Length: 148
Length: 161
Image: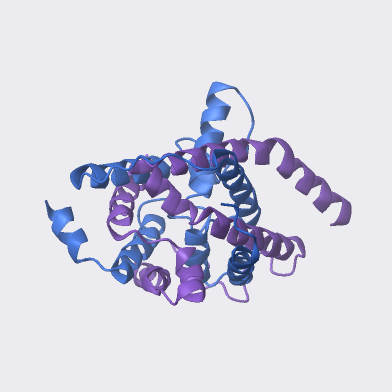
């Protein structure tokens, strides 16, 4: 129960902050390259440092941080498929997110602002989740079984 | 309002910090685990919510992360609401016409499928990297590669006007 309330409250907070700051984790990568704009890049850096400091600090206070830091003990590091999925999934996410103009977090924030373009994006996004379950995941599972 | 004062002074870096610490806190003390580094994820948490609703309403058997089995994570609802509150406060509600709704719909559709394959949205990929996950370091490098390819594509494509 606590995790549902926690995610709702954290979601409210980061949604609020996301609207005020307009940060986007794809623009943090694309804007420096596109137009020497490093505004959102600071958010990418802050996110990485904040999470790192958080995991170290909360871990030392007895919080749940199992296996941290993973590094060479990353689960499934010897398997082929997680790496293939990381490569294809990562590239596709980056490529199409640039065309869309933002990361999924940014589009959720923009939908909250009432922007129709973001609402249309989220329609595709949520239909896409169902499609992933119905089709893509089955194909991927068959692939893993066939090739191992 | 406290949030208002806080937000007006927050830079992009500080906002990133707050989100990162929030993700770590959610996992460490607020029970948003397993899996690890799953405190905040705009793709995984959206998937869990959809799967939970589908399973309970339509009786499907969509897989989801262990944390969401009984009660789902509600991050996406929080973000939508939090952003709406901020926009209402500042009267920043925007409503412009969408030029290419079909293209935007397809992009959202494609992005979520690739991100689910990766197992993370860009936000979680960064949090997972700070957890030391090697797969996600590779995944993030390829997000960067995809972004650069996308920028080059945009630069080169003929602009229909």
